[in-house]
Structures are given as C-alpha cells and as structure tokens.
Length: 357
Image (cartoon, rainbow, N blue to C red; front, side):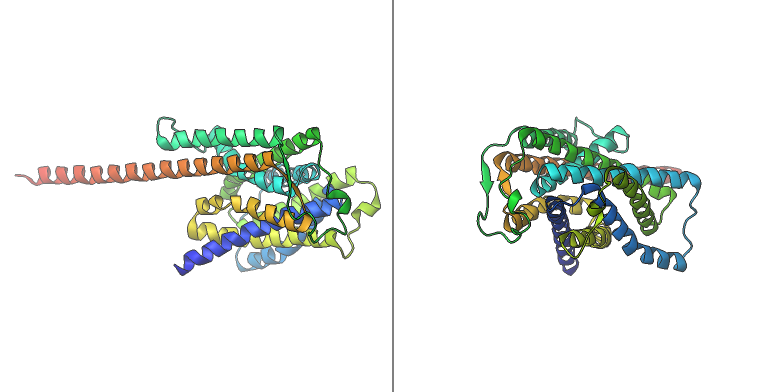
C-alpha cells in the first residue's frame, strides 16, 4: 500500500513537471526568446546535467561497445526523435497555447500504438473486444484533433484580472491567434508528436544493441545539442537572440534541461519498473488539467470551447486504446495459461498410459 502511494505521488509529480514545461516554454517564447535557440540551450543544459552521472556509471562498469553502425542509429534517433520534435513543438507553441500543447500530448500513446502497428510491433484483432476498443480509441482521437483544429467556439478567459505574470506578457494577454495560425499550430504539434512517437518506437530497438539507458540518453542529448546548435545558428543571426541573462529565459532553459530531462527520467523509470508503462500512460491527461490551471492562474490564458471539447475526446480515445490493450494482454495471458494447463494434462495422461502394464 505504501509503495502504491509513492507511485501515485511520483506520477503526479511527473505530470506537474511536464505542465511546468509547457507553461515556462510558452512564457519564454512570448517574451521574445527564439524557439530554436531555446532548444539548443535546453539540450546543452541537459547534457551538462547528465554527463557526470554517465561518466560515474562508466567508471563503475564497462560500457557496451559503441560501433559505427550503432552511433549512426543513435545520431539519426537524436535528429528525428529529439531535435526535430523539440524544434517543431517550439514553433507550434508560438502559434497556439500551453494548454493546447498539453492537450495534444494525449495523442502520443495513440500515435505510438499506430506506428507500432504499421511496423508490426503491435497487433490488433478487430474480432475481439480489445481490438474493437483500440480501433474506436484511434477514431475518437482523430475526432478530437479535428475538433481542436477546426472548431473554436466561445472563448473563456479564467481569472481575468488576477494573474501573476502580467508585467512581461501584457501585450499577449488578449491576443487570440487567427484561425489559419491556430490550425497550422495544431498540425505542427501533431507532427512533433509523430516524431516523438517514432523515437519511442525505435529507441526500443536501439536499446537492444546498446542497453545502457543512462549512457544512451546522455549521448542522445549531446548529439541533439550539436544538431540544435547547427539549426539555431543557421536561422538566427542576431547575437542578441542568444543572450539569456538572469530572467525567465534562463530559468525556463534550466528547468527544461535539468528538471524535465533529468528528474523525470529517473521518476518515469522508477514508476514503469514498479507499476508498469500502462499505469504511467493512464495519468497523461493530468498534464492537460495541471497546464490549464497553471496557464489560467499565471498567464490569464484564453481557452476555447473547441479546445476543451477536443481535449475530452483525446482523453477518451487514449483510455479506449489503453483499455483495449489491457484487454488483449489479459486474453493472451488467459490463453497461455489454458494452453499450459492443457499441456500438463496431456503429459499426465501420457504418463498414466505409459505406466499401465
């Protein structure tokens, strides 16, 4: 019971950290920080944070061999799964809102399942209840995305006059993105989630060849730092865009690089080890709830009815896919158990027959 409480508090902490990520990233962009420069500094901070732990681990035990083939795979995984995903989500947040970014996170498990299905790493049987729930979940998620992108409805602005960060963001408070900008932001957010889903699916294969999780994470952060620097340097020529100072920009970079990349890495690994990946995935909607509350309180963010309705559909689709997967796993275990019992009975029968004079 005590371990269950610890797991619950851990997942709540994880989702709060991610909610803070969306909030602080949005604030940094709204006060004028370049999105590509932000990604570079974030990955640089993450590398500095993780490197000492990786070197310490390397001293205690011999690291797995890093061949040229594995290095190329890790480089491409970093490029398309981390650098591209973070750069795209940064631009998407500029176009939309922190709440929308948190809402679309609910599509990640569904997109990951769909990619795993295409790569034949996952299966679905439409004749079973679990398979039908998976298909229904994907369909509901598509409906949620369409609702968020194409239907806005009435606007809601919570805490109209009392929000904490108004000295930096006063000019952004009442600015509502145009319909075209909003749609562009939604689909960029989905593109980022697609890139991240590819990373989740393919990283499992890379881990089989290079099984050290901490070293792999550190190496990916280091390579992503180099890649994001090249991207940022090629599109950002103004030297003032690279300045941080003792302000919200530096705090956002440090938070995302150290807390999001460092602390959540440990917490997620611990939760998955103790309670499994489904338990962690089921709490993903908490990110959206926490982000909406924090954005309303700190930013006075405007929320559309279409975003709320679409987010509800995304959460519903997520749970349908997860419950469908749980049903199929339960059926597989039952089938395997029955098969084992049948084999034991058959073996016992043969032994009786053989022992009969």
